[in-house]
Amino acid sequence: MVLYHLVCPAKYRRVVFTDGVDKELREICMEIAKRYEIRFLDIGVDDDHVHFLIQSVPTYSPTRIVQTIKSITAREIFRKVPSVKKQLWGGKFWTKG
Image (cartoon, rainbow, N blue to C red; front, top):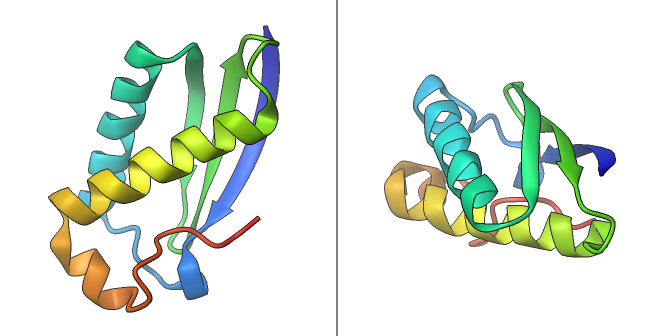
């Protein structure tokens, strides 16, 4: 198993991680962990970014892990918390990179 520490800022560094978004994000991550060989050891949420401590198998590249997490969490948060989409007018949840 390999450990990764990812820091993912919200698009435009907007303050979008309210308690409701934090709760949804954690639930989404637990669903990701069930479907993929990605284990979330810790999720630290700040106002405008998230720290993920992740454990995964060496066959998953870091790029694949980040793409999986960012795409699924963005889609599901926009679906479950529509007010976030209004704050992030460009239609993207996470910054690039």
